[in-house]
Image (cartoon, rainbow, N blue to C red; front, side):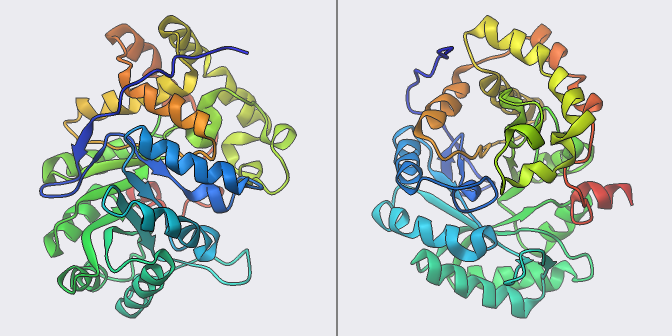
Amino acid sequence: MTEYNTEHTTIGRVELGAGGPLVGIQGLGCMGISEFYGDTDEAAARATLDAALAAGVTLFDTADAYGRGANEEFLAPFVAAHRDEITLATKFAIERSDDPAHRGVRNDRAYVRRAVEGSLRRLGVEVIDLYYMHRRDPAVPFSESVGAMAELVREGKVRHLGLSEVTGAELREAYAVHPIAALQSEWSLFSRDVERSAVGAAAELGVAFVPYSPLGRGFLTGSFADATAELPAGDYRRDQPRFTGVNAKTNAALLDPVREIARAHGASPAQVALAWVQQRAVVHGLPVVPIPGTRRPGRVAENTAATRITLSGPELALLEPIADRVAGDRYPDMTFSSAAREEG
């Protein structure tokens, strides 16, 4: 088994937006602990949270939709034990029911107010540090949705506001209603549509960027080539366009330069992919906090060690064409992605 460099000191810190919280330059996405990636070893998942905090990770990211609230409940004991050490982020807007196929998007004021009370209760806190609108319903004006979120700030239930999967124009419109600390959208070597407008708008407004799926939902680790054959039943990636059939084989071949650069640094492909996100954000003048998800303490060590890697100009040039060659959309249904609204 190849041993990768995971030695690191505690990671540095970055401010989320003007006047926002100071957090570690890499966060932890907690979604997979409760859903989407098959069965979870609860003891290992709790050890992962502890390992992340010990490594300097302070931004812990969840949502009311993850496990229909189960993810927030899982985090509650960890949050209670370390409340003054961490920045807690959660989200609202994806409406779920007992029907696993049901997905709705709600941004109306009544829903926002109901959702925050549920999250506060499940997390066992009096205030949420960073509260995101998880997805945008274009039928609801920002004056209502972000206006309702601003009410929560004034009432002391939320400290800072965030948005997820919005275009640059939408970010500017929302910011005019209330300052936005962070924009969370997919950004990786495989997914760069945010660079069309959202990244530029965030830099202009001083909004921090929080890339989710910076490892391409695991594809950029180089650990598998065909989700249908290699992932267990219940793993949602088995139905993702980039992970199956011809698309998967095409995308696996794109990782050759990632592996080449990883070997040169004594690193893993995942570390190279994370280092790319950090440096790409610097090019755009953005504070950035990627939130790779994992359920294993060893992965935390590997991921946070990526903050010590600096890619050279020639290495960045080798990686530049990858996103344009990726086969398949990010989701089977791109309706609620910012990319869909950019194209429309």
